Length: 145
Image 1 (tube, rainbow, N blue to C red):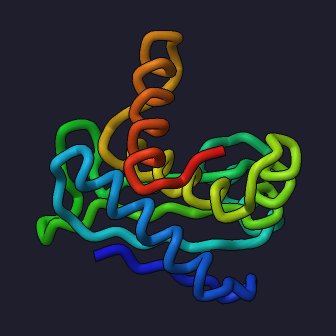
Image 2: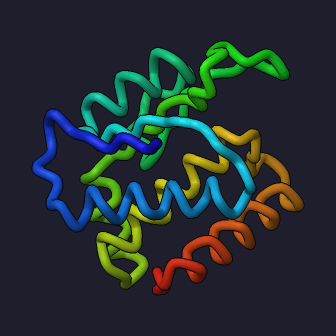
């Protein structure tokens, strides 16, 4: 189950549904089951969490908090973790890349799910793998640029 909510941003039903659909598609693409929460929030809160947990004092577009550490699951009930999306950054990036806000929110949801499943993009080969997966997942649900 994917739970999408926001206490600070007025998400439309289309945005909420699109984010959940993209996250569910990423799980299905990877053949994984599990629950996760996606919180859409403000730049100020995202910056605080980024500073406190990653020691980077800057706003970012998406943060993930996996329910595992290394190979050790921290939640025995199938809970995968939490994803936080910065709505304002998604708006900025949608304009910058010339696509819809819904496409950007969907992309960030997929990106976050892949992080929760252990993917990263710290090296060029890893970045290429994530990029290809993101494209395949989004195209699979008809979300294109």
